[in-house]
Image (cartoon, rainbow, N blue to C red; front, side, top):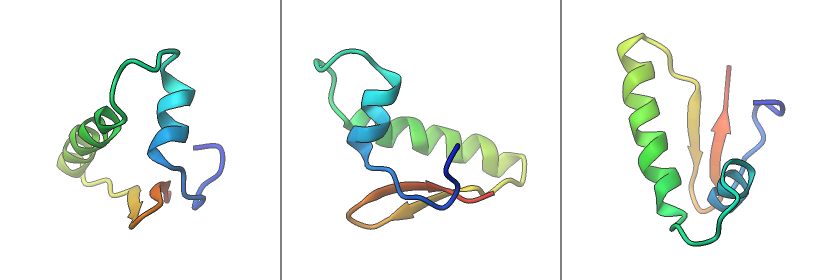
Length: 59
């Protein structure tokens, strides 16, 4: 969120949030999906996907 529009990989997001290497980076995909559904219910569309790279925050 500090760098709007910059694509961040799943690994970058995972490493910034969790201090462990035991979980799969697919957890990032699952959590982004949940977050998108909740934001969509509020009419907010700020999370983007860059195919092959990761995710972006577009305010």
